[in-house]
Each structure stands twice: as structure tokens, then as C-alpha cells.
Length: 402
Image (tube, rainbow, N blue to C red):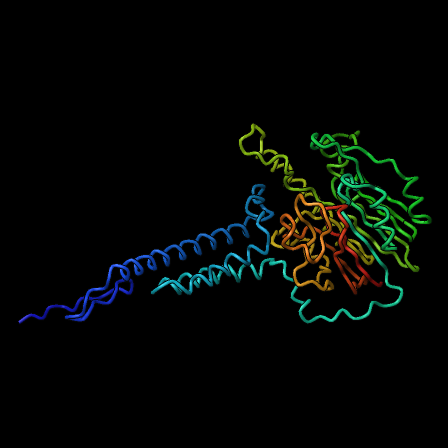
């Protein structure tokens, strides 16, 4: 006599109804089918996002097309897997733990590889700033307040009464001409009237204004002669002069300040994918320039025995790996910032970038501006301040002692 084997039911199959029980209604069958498809969709979405997150991290700062993947704000890199993790709770059967595991892995990856969240802000008490601490201001001035007025910019800067100003985009620009539209600002007289007794240093678009004597000024990184020949014009200087080091005499010691504006990886007027513009060549050139600028800065900082302050517009978010090398030789000042999510740049939206502007401005989800120290330079306070519509960037202000 043979015994028929008991059929094995997979976890995705519904349990059979007991003998004599009524068959499930049409609505219930539809609901089961929808939930099954929903679970499959969540698993697929979580898997795709995890693949994207891993690939983005592997190629970030290493490949000239990585910008396409890096353009996502760090906050979104956290938000997407968190949303998928919540969505996985409604999946049925074995799809629920699979979706949760995939989303959880992507969330952990985002947290440990540059989330942009400033965790020390949750427990760090800033405390009083020591008497005599230096006040340093850094700002990308957006083509020297071209959209508003340079007098307003100077008034904004003077109101901070800083000891040192590290200013980027001290330059004129003619809209519509792209990289050919930059021209030099010859305004030393106006600057000396605005900052009497201060010392000035320039390199291309970079302007450092210091209350302390400038004892030395060094070019850092590749200069324009490397790419354009021995007699570059100002537009070519603007393109390659991206780090200005000035050594300041402060109370008998030397403080090295690095004024930084790393090359933007992609100008927004070159985004049209249907034009005959050679995007690959353009991105390859920009990537090579950025790599050379970061490498030059890292090498100079590593060899510098003085206390160091580095600040400016790095055109890099917390999730990009472009800052990894600099973090190896200098200390990120973010822990002295009181904001849990420091933001410093918004796209195409003039107007005060205040704390109440998080959701009423165009894409205020990025941080491009950073500050670092090395040696005996200690940052006690680090803030991002509104610029009253003068720039798309917020102003960096640091209080430090040597």
C-alpha cells in the first residue's frame, strides 16, 4: 500500500480553505493580489536603491561621470531608504524581511559614508568663546554681489568686524558667455576704504582681507600656466587659480589660511543632453582639474608646520568622497557648528537663507562650504549666517584661538 505525499505549500501561497469553508470573496482575492504585488515592488525598489547607493559610493570622486550619481542631496540618501524601510512593514510573507534588510543596508551605508548630519550638535555645549578669539569669515560672494549691489556686500562683511575675510568669486561676470565671461575687478581703492588698515592678498578670483600682517603668500596647486601657457588671460586665471594660501602674523605666531574655491564639476548652462556639446570631454576636464586642486591643497597642508585654517566653497557635499583626502590631513570644523543639519547653498533662489527658509526656497538641501583646521588652531564656534539675498551661499563664521 502506498501513501500519497503531503503537498508542501510555499510561503507565498495562501493557506487552503478548510473543507466546507466558503471560498474567499472577490474583494479579498484582489486585496491579496495587490499586497503580493506591493511586496514585490518594495523589494525591487529597495534592491535598486541599494545598488545605486553602493555604486555611487564606489565611483564618487573617482570617475568623471560620478556627478550624475552624486547630485542627490545627502539628506535624500538617508530619506529614501528610511521611507523604503517603513514601506517594507506592509509587505507580506518573506518579502517583508527581504525588503527591510535591503533598505536597512542602504540606510546604514548613508549614515556611515556622509549623511551630512552633525551628530555632536545633539550633545555638544558650545560654551563661551574665549576672549581674544579670532573671528574669520568666509563667503562665496556670487560674482561680487552681481545680482544685488557690491555696497550691500561690503556693508554685510563690515558688520561682522572679522579679523580675516576669505572671499571667493571676487570677479565680474557677463551672463551668457559661460567660461569666457569673467573679468578682473580692479577695486583696491574701494576695498581699502571699506577695510582701512587691513592687508589684501589676491589670486585670480580669491581675495583675502586680513587685519594681521601678511608675511607670505603662496600659490597652491596647479596654476593656469599648466593648462593655458605662460601668459594666461584673466578668464584662464579664474579657471585654475583655486587655492590662495596666506601666512599671517598673529601675536608673534604664524597662522596659515587657505582660501578655497574648488572647480565646480558641472556648470548648469551645460546640462542640455540633447545638444551637440561634448559632455564627456567637459566632465573629464572638470574632474581632472578638481583632482589636481584637491591633491595640491592636501600636499601643501600636510607639509605645513604652522597652525592652519582652511575655508571656502569646495563644491562638494558631505556624501561626495572628494573631501576624504583633506580629512586625512586636517580636522573638519563641523563639530563646532550648533546645527544638526548644516546647509550652506541653495540653487537659483535669491533671498535670505534663514532657518525658516528650509521649505520655502528652491532646493536648499546642499552644503558646499566647509572649514578645516590643523595644528594649534582650535575652533570654538562655527556658524552659517544669512547673506540677505546677496549670495546663494550662506556665510561661514568661525571663532578660533591659537
